[in-house]
Length: 374
Image 1 (cartoon, rainbow, N blue to C red):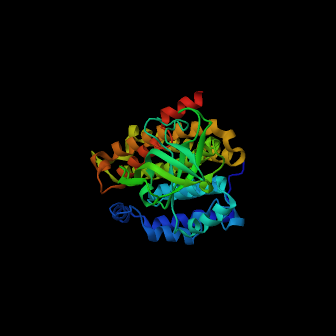
Image 2: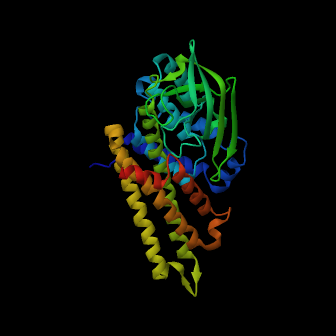
Image 3: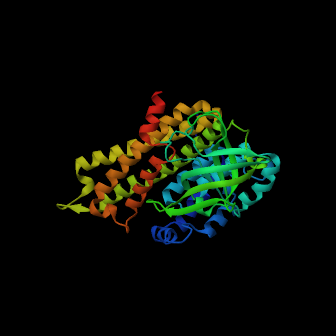
């Protein structure tokens, strides 16, 4: 298999790496975390100018025409900087939902704003009772003339408070746990009857709880067909899993490299920590597990790019492994740094917290192990 990047992909990877080096020192990131939005609108505009927001948008619609592999290259670099901007929520999930499910008229309305950064989307799919099961939906929508009337509640909507529109999964027929009867729709964030309560998460990101109370959604805002939205929902979640897994791999690389550097500099009993064999073994384990995670990421991403949901078993394996190994590498990095590993002034703890959150996104390690086995 040829893993060499094309010239365009190499340019994208290099430009993202430069952006991280220039903009995402820990101190600068912490200042952004403390702002009201939790990210930089200037950075978001820069991403739009560089074309990253149109990475998977077809060239005929003004985008780059890439696929999940191109997203992986960007997200791996984002993981190295713990980027705060809503790239996954708006671009990987939201824009992808529009490309896959919107009518031509709706695409023409939405894509210019999505590409220039003036419009942001959020993906409202998770519900409290669902326990990671995508089909477990009690938020419901009923037809009323030319509209749907939407009622329900969505939890942990990433960057929901800053979004201009929400991609919402709703039950339009069937039972609570049926895969049939699910419909995706685009809902304006300022619609009457919506309540959005934003809050910061433990890793410095932003999320929201969203309540819908008799919200009117025109039929023209549907994404895909009525009652047949489960496959589209699954495709979006798979893309989300690949994106955050790539981010996790980038974070793991920083953790193991920072740990090696620290043990080479830190002395104990007159010797550098890196000279102690038991610590060498732990760092070799960190490196080997990181390399395995990266290899599995490449395999899953290439399989999805080629065969879509046919690669679902590999995606389950990836998400299980990323969650398990991310926590292992994070714990070792913190332990080898001692008490410094959990201070706000050192970036180790921030990467570890992000890996813990990534494990919980789109189903944790145990959940995906069960899906893989099934």
